[in-house]
Image 1 (spheres, rainbow, N blue to C red):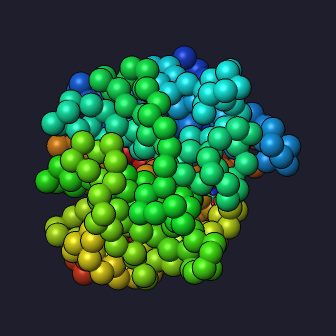
Image 2 (cartoon, rainbow, N blue to C red):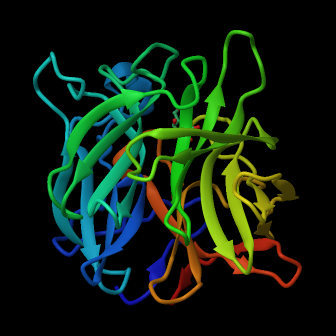
Image 3 (cartoon, protein in one colour):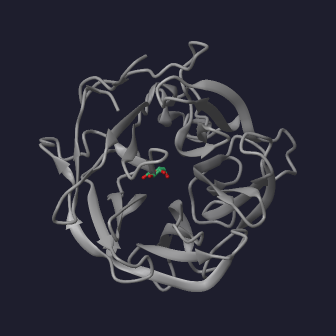
Length: 326
Ligand code: GAL
């Protein structure tokens, strides 16, 4: 492969690893370490959504990782956070490690993985263990991550839905998540919470992003003093129109800057939902990772990667590209 190839907006294109297998790393991210890019995500199962608790949106494998030097050709590195076969374990499968994100802590020399944790049988409900963040750590980027348990940031009323983790230039890190409070019923809304210095817990410092009510799938990028998040609406596995927000301070006010997609006649983020944004090593260029979920066989979901265009008026644009090169 010498270019990103995504096909038409209504097409599902397989992205194969160097062994010829379909890359199966849902809603994860990229971390650059030891001179390589590492792409990780939750391994889906080859099943339709309609099969309910046995559906493909759960995992019985875990979080997997691939490595690459050019972002195009990916070598499978294996399972880094494993589902357990022990019914007593918090990681008994099928379950979900949704939207896993890994950051490196320079002080503790540890790789820290946060995810939206959903216990067996992987129902996405409102109970303890179905709407929390989970934590795992490792001394190497591609080793076996050790599970540390799960919790709710801020307080026990705020259930966790979609999330991401962002490591800022000064080394501080933040969880951005869709906080869902049932009682008293208030609008679901994205929140930013500052992590502790070791990234293993939460501080009391947080901000409700009032402008981002009823948004999820947050993907963060930074350029010239502005932080941007590209988000989706809340329609489960169905695609919907993206909306971006910007701020000068992660814990400050965030401004709604509208749908970043250009010429998107479908108003569905080109028939995708965001997973993550990452910068190309050594540059300030960003790629947004989007996913076209295939609910009749989750293994056949496609990964759509597009460059984020930063405009002179401090807005961002996304343009669909059937095929493109760095
Ligand atoms: C989506 C969300 C996914 C997953 C799914 C479950 O809206 O972005 O991460 O949670 O719903 O229905």
